[in-house]
Length: 349
Ligand code: 3EB
Image (tube, rainbow, N blue to C red; front, side):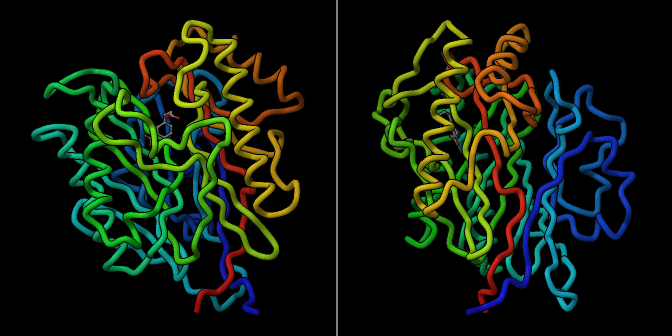
């Protein structure tokens, strides 16, 4: 049996703290997903030594957790240091097990073609650098509920993404990574992603129709994502939970009731967590020991959502609350989460 030789972990902090970290810490950073509003003067995405997406979204609460940093965790001293690369518009950083990348694509013709182009570039990088598995996609776009070119923009995104997947070899085309897709006030299509060489397990939610099987009323192509991806070794497990909303079956529940949507979303999160625990055969994951990112459509709903989460979960919750638009007009919030936080990966060689 192979020993774990490398690992991954996350850190959360306010945006302004990243720069102040020691060089030895920065050397292990694969990449970062940062929320800041107002957009900070120091545009870290341009100067950082690691791939970073800097998202222009109002932080409503939890600024201490507003930047998510993915770090490699060397297990043995002989682990090689991280290296960086560029591929088309992608900036990436990698070791022998993991690759974190970011890409921003301006909309020259349509959001649909920008999306297809972004995903084609990511899939080409996967082939070129031989990181065959996708663990997580984070997708951000302007005006997600707007309509142009005759189709709602989120639906255009789904067409571009699905068409890029379909054009790939089955090895990529059949994958259903964890994902989120949110609307921001402005900015280009911005995507962060994490790839690796260990096969993840795709988790679905028994309360929900699988997103890739949604009926046609939600658009001409289905969304290519699973409810969570699970990475596990003998010692450890890491769970990436996709953006989760108040959907049962394929139908939005409680369209005008943010409290009821919050509860329904938490029940969905619990269902996804229960599936992950079932898969690894123990109750490793729960709603307490988890990092949440909560996207809220209407700023005024913050205290209702936050207090309901607090009441439902109890204890101290680790969460950042940001204003963003959700991909269905009737959804008032979406919650994503990472659980496990650290993982020792087994050697693949
Ligand atoms: C849903 O369950 C809500 O298109 O990548 C959640 C997570 C949602 C990911 C995506 C969309 C996506 O359908 C929306």
